[in-house]
Amino acid sequence: MPETKKSAQSEVVPPISLRRRFTDHFMTGVAVLTVVLVLVPLFAIFAYLVYRGVGSINWAFLTQTPKPVGEAGGGMANAIVGSAFILALASILGVPLGVGAGIYLAEYGRNRLGDVIRFTADVLNGVPSIVIGIVAYSIVVLYQKHFSALAGGVALAIMMIPTITRTTEEMLLLVPQALREAAYGLGIPRWRTTLSITLRTATSGVLTGIMLAFARVAGETAPLLFTAFGNQFWNLRVDQPTAALPLQIFNYAISPYDEWHRQAWAGALVLIVLIVTAVAAVRLAVRRGTFGAA
Amino acid sequence: MPSPQPIESTKVSDLSSAGRSAAHFFRESGEIGDQVFKFAMLLCGLAVLGTLVLIVYELVLRSGPSWHAFGFKFFAARDWDPVNEKFGALPFVYGTLVSSLLALIIAVPLSIGVAVFTTEMCPPALRGPLSFFVELLAAIPSVVYGLWAIFVLVPLLSNYVQPFLSRSLGWTGFFTGPPYGISMLAAGIILAIMIVPIISSITREVLMVVPQHQREAALALGATRWEMIRVGVLRNARAGIMGGVILGLGRALGETMAVTMVIGNRPEIAKSLFAPGYTMASVLANEFSEATGDLNLAALIEIGLALFLVTIVVNALARLLVWTVTRGQPSRANA
Image (cartoon, rainbow over all chains, first blue to last red):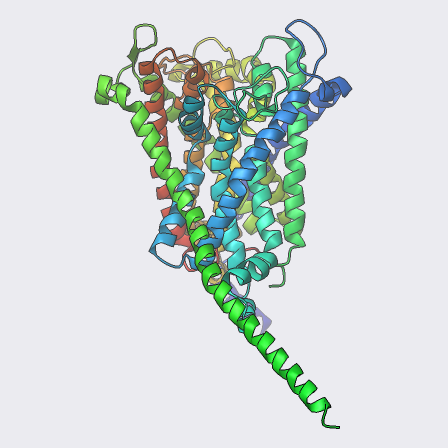
């Protein structure tokens, strides 16, 4: 009996040939190899960044403005503050517009116009950052007649808006319809419901979108090249050229001076710590988010 | 004794009138408020639309002089001479295409491998951290990639990789010339590292919406795991993976800083990947703020317009492809 059973089984399911089994293991190996090949540059970049950066960060770097070529010391304090300034301008312009457009799409946008705006936001998301720099140049710099923090802020705001719009819409749509209906039932007008009930419920998700957009533009260099332009000194005026951390890193990296290379690494470390902190915070917030259960 | 009644009744009437006026107030403010609010939100939505229109308008308007001076020949001419006001964009178009294609050749197999590994092979506990690390690659700013490429990748290429390649593959003509490191090859490699996260995350998303019964059917027919992946998963996800690849291409075409820092910035067309090149985005980065005349500026903006149009077409195509696969499925299938 066991004999016949065995032979019957082997007739139905022929044993997997050596070649097929080898291919299977080989492809698994290839997949593991690709993972290793992708992760190696990641760790190499971070390791080298920490290795070169930590040694170069000191109190002077964080508190002083750049020294003239040839003099040791100095720092990027003006660039760090300048970046914060430009990002603040970008957020002031971009966040309300982005959130507003998101609200429109989620609450009033189930129509043709909504589809058009949705598609436009996706298209904007794919526009190369350097092209956005050109546009900010021609709508702000050409009228002001000189480079300015405002132009940089406008460029970065244009880059923030699509991300914020789409995530805000997605997050508002996750809020259960019953919650809106409950508010209408209490006689609360629609606008009030949207602001105090729907948006409020989706706050953590909307904030996530804003942080992602922020992290994305914080490291942008290309749109600032001919808008904020850079500055070796302090500037907190909206209509003047302003230093930015990514710009300073770029200029120092392509310079021939060792001292500046050192500072470029330090600047890159500061920049990446800021961005990774933001992204990690977002991931934590999402995992703990209000929508895990909803 | 009759006194409480009137008091009570006034109380009731007060309450109801208060309630009525509250309802009245809400209805009134609601009607006006709703109109105002909807209008304000509409304006925000239109601002998004307006931004795109403004981008197109400004680019077309300000590239006009170059368009009138050179016409279509702008993209076929090879010389870029600001002093004599002769502008041709061919070297930049060539550099953009070659560096992006090189990046795709390197990045596509890697990205698909990573996506297949994370969705089909790896232990569930490893899945989260792995995709987090790959996402982290996307969070590194372009300028930091460039910095790393200048000081680590380029020396590595010129000391080890380029001599090896020219010895073993020099006869093809793609790997000849002095191994300076700064080259088209360096640009392609750094671009590849930068587009891996986008291609692999889209591929992962697409693989996850392949129905489970496709896998089960393949396994039930006696397929090994790899055969199951090949026949049951990858074949079903082809269009979506293609979409991810094209999205990666869109990113590579427009990438500026890292490329500018390692490609060498010389407007020449060379067969060898060891030779320096120039891309559309990097010529904008390098020369825009120093443009010497109206025609020079217009020529640069026309390059920007071309870049803009190409990336829009590429992105629209990619979204369409991804959409045909994930259609009807929740867009964020978290396993």
